[in-house]
Amino acid sequence: MHWLNYHHLYYFWLVARNGSIARAAEQLQLAHPTISKQIHQLEASFDDKLFNRVGRNLVLTEFGQTVFRYAEEIFSVGRELQDTVKGRPSDRRLRFVAGMTDVMPKLIAHELLKPAFELSDEVHVICHEGRHDDMIADLAVHRLDIVLSDAPVSPTVHVRAYNHLLGECGLTFFAKADLAAKYQRKFPSSLDGAPLLVPTEKTTLRRDMEQWFDSEDFRPKIVGEFEDSALMKVFGQDGMGLFPASTAIEKEVCRQYSVKVVGRIDAVRERYYAISVERRLKHPAVVAICESARTKLFE
Image (cartoon, rainbow, N blue to C red; front, top):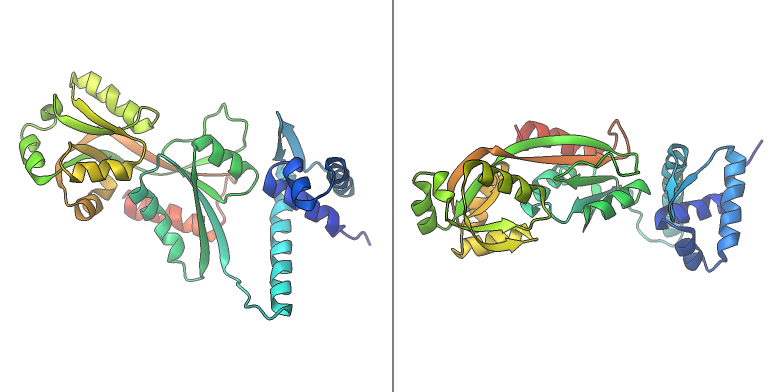
């Protein structure tokens, strides 16, 4: 009977989690060639490749992704065994690691993630935030179970990832009560010359809004640009200008920021995606997020 070399598997697991042999070598305090040799021996025992090299990065093969999932479970159980032996309480909750792009509105992210906390089986939810490309890179090496984004993965990205459309909706403009009353009249033409708070130019929403303004020949007065959508809403709450947000969270925006709806447009559509390395979603938290988004949030 052929026995699995768990030392080799452990080295592979650390490399996959760290994204490079160099970082794993530093953690293990071993030489780079030593770890590389162990991984080659593990590949030889499986008779299949675990990694492909893309530039300077190591990317898991499809077979490597399968091995990594087993390794995650094996070493998670190993840690629990050690805790049990030492008399520490064991935590058998399902682990769910979600990545969010930094331009994702926090209210949308909250509504999307909420079903993961409401599963009948307890789930340990871990949320990370960062640039779209960084989140996709972490997804590729299985540091994340899913990435939530307002944009799909580009076909030019050299990562096998699948875009799952969660839903789409129109855009609502909000403002403090006195401003809202002024610009509700003759909306949307009232946006021409109106003081407006907007996302920065790097966002999909900003680009779509600019195209729509051009098509309607509107020239709003841009008084503020924000990377953080929550900060934009706070300035809108203070009456600094009108601001946009997804129609799907209209009631929550009005309640949380004490603002009124100025008007709605359907010509600008916001789309949200769950991005995974699996064509068919399996993780219970991811399945719950997708089902809730499609049947409730974006119904």
